[in-house]
Length: 98
Length: 505
Figure 1 (cartoon, each protein chain N blue to C red):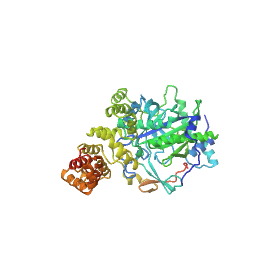
Figure 2: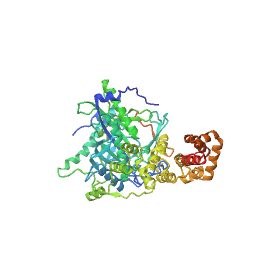
Figure 3: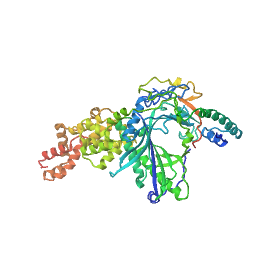
Figure 4: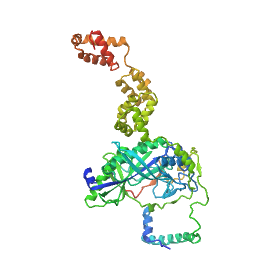
């Protein structure tokens, strides 16, 4: 089974705009390795005759008519936001595009 | 903070002497559905911030998406019109990325199973040549929210202290149409890019799946471009110029990138694979972000949605209902209207074909419909940098103006003033005529008085005309037109003058 490397953790951290310390890279590499290892055990029971699936139900074409349903009010929509301004969700400075 | 890059460009012809451009065009079309792709929130433009959201499009835990049937139908129609194969079975996928314009932290899109693939669109260049653009795929996805960056100098993300998000747009259905690499266009690559986007826009409008108004962001184009030295088959590294939002800009962006790439390559540099921003003011592009690799998006099948399997009979039914292709329709109209290829192309570029057709259907003669839309109205649209279709005037109103001209109630000069009044929001043509007092003076009595006065005021000219110098009548006609503030029929005025002075026209 492939081990998760420090470099892979660093790459993921960069994508997620997270700043990780050197020791954290090792720490998370180990944890991620454990998680992936646990999920990978599924592969052990899935034999050739079990096709990969993304949904447990054999359904297709579940659609709805193009009819407007009531939306939340802006107050409701923003009620869980940590911060708001001008009836909009306020988020910290966006990093990574400079 | 303004981002400026000091780049020297290679002259266009020189760049083409060394390199072949290869382009890829990605066009996003916002569908005109009433509701979002995965929830029943309205897609109406111009609503209050965050007034068209729900737990699904806000990405609340436990909220489940359901696909909009018209979104799928529109995607299939677009695919068929682009001569694509329609997938028998396909899924949605999550495109994961960290940016607050999608509250879910992913965009629901399609990855390796697009609903339509392997097609083409024949586009017509200015000289009538047909260029075939191959289509890689057309897939369904959703639009993102709108960010407002606060604290920076010009509303840009650079230097902003924080950003504000409005999620009304998040979840509006998008169809992304991706071309295969466009090769062999040479120096005409920018022209091909423009013609392709123009043709696609016409097609989308003909299918009635979106209004495809570029100035409103309903249709947006990314221009991917790379160069390779003549004789090579391997593609060079590409740049991706994002959100180029007018036909003219598509052409300029491609041209600029050809010149910039050539400069970098000629000086021994390497092109970085990155996104670039296009600047409307000077037609330049500047560096955006270094492009993430597809694997960085960690695409995986969307577990909350079941696969889409368009029934073959339904696909064929949709195929049977496709409208006449815009290019063929233009050919037919060109013959009906008796105009040149070049004039037709200008009308297409101006987005005027449908408007002129509607004006003719509303009763205007073809030549007048064309004249007003391509003359006075095109000028007004240009001055205000809007699309013709966005002008506050309807084909029916233009047809009414044409009717008044045909009836002799307006001359061209007055008709222009009526159009101007309608555009200024003064009301219908008849209201403008009434309010501004713009009728041609056909009252023979009033006209006769004006003619008599002009003759009396210019005895020397009158004598010349009496002596047979008919050409001198022009000065008197001018005087009468001035006295009637341009509201007289000049030909009628001339006749009256000659009649009164006993001269023969």
